[in-house]
Length: 190
Length: 190
Image (cartoon, rainbow over all chains, first blue to last red; front, side, top):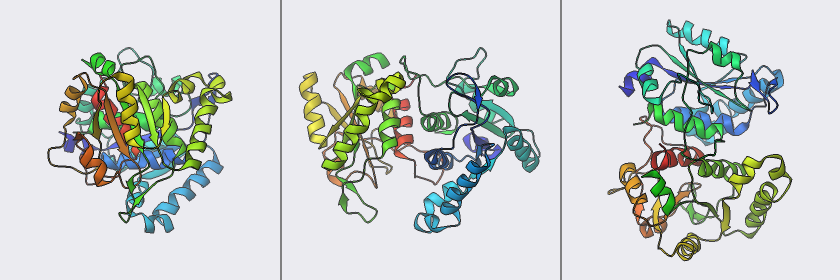
């Protein structure tokens, strides 16, 4: 079942725009170097097909491409081939729509868009059902927001919102790097 | 069952000495700022009782205490109370033995030491059995190594070695921050 899920393809997307600021405004957050590395390594560990970083800022795009190039075509990758393999999954794009269109074109099938959230939405997709959706044969785009999460528009346009990770306490402030790790493990782990 | 497990107390320990270097030598690795934050937030999310950072280097101890103080007693904590709460779990100690002795004294019970590893050991503790060990009533010390992992001596002295996280691929290079998240979720998550 998991191999079937991996075959259809799960793609991780880390969105820096449009996301909400602390005060609720729509912003473009800054790319964090360790998000590039950690999420690439976790994605590779669980067999994700791609890891898209979405930002609209040109200087951030240039900077992130430089970081990735250091580890894929540059000196970093020569010294650390495992890191090269993980960072090879990274693509930087300007919008979630662009990511979805690209995956649809490459695979010939419309991907299902599943947005993650720290909030519990009515009719949220459970992890158990998420594993089943993965086996439907369509590619799956798994969206993570930075800052205070993706905007309501992104949530409304998605096919599903995934149920939040419940740590069993009143504390609901997981780092996005940890959320990606737990969610990929719950959806694709043995 | 999980509340019972939390009551006995799981303590996360991130070891910087003694760990192995790329070439197998015993070293003291450097403390990484994001390990302090991410693992504190993840520990708090899953209800861990403490998060110990082990280093023998005095300058690293001073630096790490400074970082933690900024978020617990300083300006950072005023601006971000959630971060203050997480970083409040952090204690910096010089050895794993010191951590174990401290927990034993505070709780009146000898803790079980469970070492995590990316390698599969014969008779490794499964996650299922790990959840049961947590319910035995003794505190549990969950050890994570930095760099190329803790030394063989640490492994030999532990009560158990936990089975590795299997992502279902040939890639076995999870960031320690991701490993902590997945392992706490598997042991304490709902």
